[in-house]
Amino acid sequence: MTLIVILLNAILVDNFVLSKFMGICPFLGVSKKLDSAVGMGAAVTFVMVCATLCTYPIYTFILAPMGLEYLKTIAFILIIALFVQLVEMVLKKKVQSLYNALGVYLPLITTNCAVLGVTILNIDKGFGLAESLVNSLGGGLGFTLALVIFSGVRSRVNNADVPEMFKGVPATLIAASIVSLSFMGFSGLFG
Amino acid sequence: MAETAAEIKKDVGKPKNKGMLKELTKGIIKENPTLVTLLGMCPTLAVTVMASNGIGMGLATTFVLICSNLVISLLKNVIPKAVRLPCFIVIIASFVTLIEFLMKGYLPELYDALGLYLSLITVNCIILGRAEAFASKNGVLSSVLDAVGMGLGFTLALFAMGSIREIIGTGKWFGIDLHLPVTMTLFIMSAGGFFTLGVIIALVNKIAGRKAPAEVGCAACPNAENCPSYNKTEGKKEAEAE
Image (cartoon, rainbow over all chains, first blue to last red):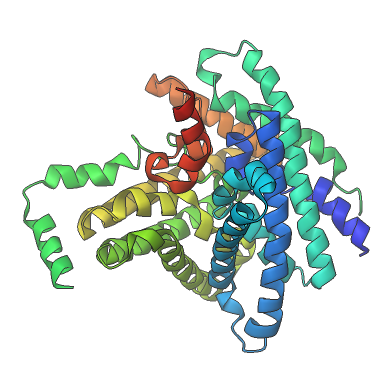
């Protein structure tokens, strides 16, 4: 598989939110406004790519040669938690403007299943480093795309007159179902 | 350890059996983690294409929840407050690895069906939420009962989701053909997952006579107030706005 196919596949066909159901909490929680949706998406994309950059060598050069593959869940979640903390501190000290844009979303990401999901998925699929990075980038961009589209849908749903029992979360979920339906059109795009 | 032993005694010694029963039942109906407090949405949507997958996922999560609540309530005086979240995550991840091994050995079919989502129990917010909001503040016995209740509530919700999606989507239930005249394959696809959960939550609200919850995710999380990440984002902003 070429890298561009992996990228498009991760963005459109295997969209993390809409077809793999990972990162539903931020998808429903942070998609109220367009700017927060973009901020969260950018933070997730950044952490996904960097987490892959950290976890891939650790798995390939430390865990796999020692026969400790089963420790990957524990190792990866620790790496992600540490990495998110580190990024937050570095950004706060060095890159104030980026911290203002992404900082508030970073701590939420530690327990975002899309980040742990993409690192484990890269290993399960047997991707090399370049393929893993592209897959993570695509996953993050797909997540951002879903959040941005959904923030637009949601502003319409909020103004609509829905039955009392569907107000709030149920209406949001059904709107998500329709957005997910439209993404199903991409399935089979790359065979 | 002497402290914890004394605590177990204290818990058992108190004549509050009714209270204990409440810890057990609150998770099943009143504070059902999936349908009322809206936690752990990812596995709820992802694995419930079949009723049996739903039960398998629910029981695996219950196991992790009971073990982690047990260990965390035992260690609550040992773990420093500043690093408690990483500690909780490591404890939870260890039990997830354990259940992965058990399932791979004894239920290989279910292991293949759940796949990646089994590892993702680690980041299920129900478990970290109960650890933070309950087990780190309460005794051993009530923490375990709380975990059993929450786990069963989660399993029931997943079982309901899985049954509805499997019956409407494939016309089968636990693999047994029900000979339905019409099936809608859409229900076992991702769009059907969102739709089914939305309708179930709406029905639960109708039956319980509650107003539908307006918030989801972090804002709806019961421990949002003492969660550092939530306070840094929306909570703080709202507080400042006020």
